[in-house]
Length: 221
Image 1: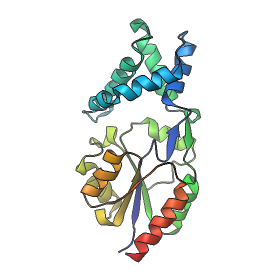
Image 2: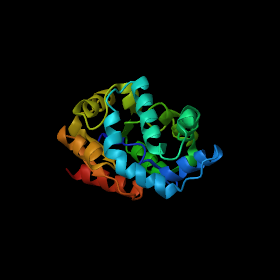
Image 3: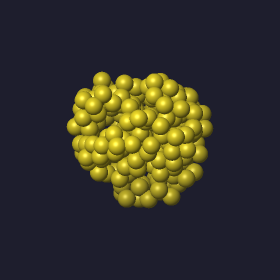
Image 4: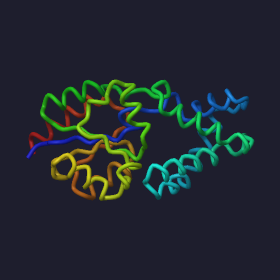
């Protein structure tokens, strides 16, 4: 049957936050006169992330923006005067729409060129929001995918089976003809496999190398 589509996660797969979420937060906070160690922010986010993930229940633009506001406030609460939260949030939110806060994964452009040369469709399925489109344009990747699907516009997020089924339907492929590549074991790997997609858990490898392997594997099936 072969591989007909590759669906990528966005942050953590195609690109990653650089040098860390805490470092980006700390840089914004310092511009407002707050001095916080990036490592302290990173530690707080890791501790609270199981709670923070639960804020994403309403996958609408308004619901996602509200979730990010709640995450921001919960993160910076020990260090920031509440009266300044709104201005700080706006600047932090916009910072994560700029390419300087990210680095592309190794082999990203080569992988996409290789897949297109093989006639394989490419898409993004992400639990992100409208900022993803701005980032892709800044990275020169806005035309590199047949579809870019973000939960906050699609109305459903990973690991919901509906998200993967919709992605396949939009691409015009069956689940067994598609490969999901992502860094989250639950949202990307298990979520995709439960509805019949192939899945590859990404751990920072060169994307061109792992995709060429997957295409060869698919050709042998």
